[in-house]
Amino acid sequence: MRPYSAAFAKSFLTPQEQPLTIGKAAYRVELGLGQGTMVETIDGIETRYPMVQALGGKNGFYFITPLDKGRLQTLPLAYDVGKRAWFDMAGSGVCHFSTGDTAAVNWKEWPYTFNTGCYGCHVSQFATS
Image (cartoon, rainbow, N blue to C red; front, side, top):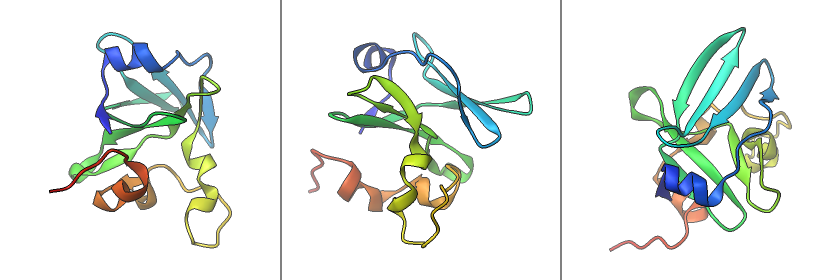
């Protein structure tokens, strides 16, 4: 886990070619100096989410944004390092949860809230004292 920065984006990410549509929303990523924002557009209304932390490295990156009441939420688009492409994070996690449901979980739901229980599987090179 590392803070998002323009230097990080320049070293590891490529710009998104087209917005990605997930359900009724279109998502695009803005990279560059002073940016690092995921923009959600629903019915012409834009909501901007800052990318404050990045998780991953070798195969892909996931991004964290602060939401209401201090929740840290995994953003809906992730980055595939090998393909150098952005993809639907929640759509790729259909089998991740043991709910029995085969539908993708909306990225704003509790299963994608980052918390201390996540570090065991999703953070490497982590040391505790």
